[in-house]
Image (cartoon, rainbow over all chains, first blue to last red; front, side, top):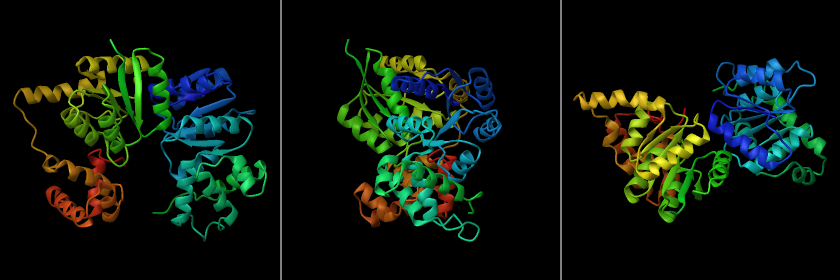
Length: 195
Length: 218
């Protein structure tokens, strides 16, 4: 894995936690976007854990630059930014998971497991932020098709902190379907959030 | 000598859990509690009486500045080390004034955090070098008698500053009344006093003011 965060203490803490989970090795660290691209090219990691707020080259641009690499590393964004617009941008640029920094280490671990298996991931507080923006109606009903009820239900369950497995059994569907719905919600998020 | 008892106050749970792991790997530290906002930090500090509180500034409900003020007042023996991303001399001066004795940036290495906790525990002060660089000229100005003009903010009472943050975070009078166990009428009076003292005329102005002062994040 490669970790990128502007703050050294965050990088230390993440390395310490992740290596404590077992089955992960942190092979590189970067404090800015440019450094991250260099570390990724040098170490070819399976997974990247990165903030989107990075100096030199912001996280969304880094994601876009990496999008062409095949097979590319799987990317989880870990940030204190919870704006739906940024979440959408991150996924559109190739991220597979998005975790809020206010979340617990257990949630981070869950994100690593899911993304490593090829599923997408949204942490509960990100799901909550998306749900609130849907409820406030910032997702325009004119330019975007209305989000199906089942997807709203899914967001509600994710916001409560339910795991994918629990959500799947509550909605009577499979992990793959949950994954599809989640990506579909992200696809429906607006390009720009109107005031 | 016993272990240094530490309380961690930061709204980022992952960071708190990681810091706990790092500190507890060193036998001279014991993390006695964690808090996710300023109010919880004050409550836990009063209940646990830690040697050192490691405190973030930007926290919901009650920010680190007010939490520092309250803890410094009720627990004079407890040392407060600020751990923040804000490389801002005004904020640093204000929070040192409020009673913190250390100001460390999150860009520090974990060894530096450990050194800073030890320093404030001993009764020394600790400032990140880049903060010291900004705070010392201010201090020298002060020492030479060039005192900056008194800010209107210091006219506010502790309660008013607490309510200012809650209004800026979007809570209604009713919600604030419930959180602080006071009547809605009292909240209304506080709100009017805050607006008058700071010469603000709308909630939008108040929010902008709160962001500028670092009371909430923009």
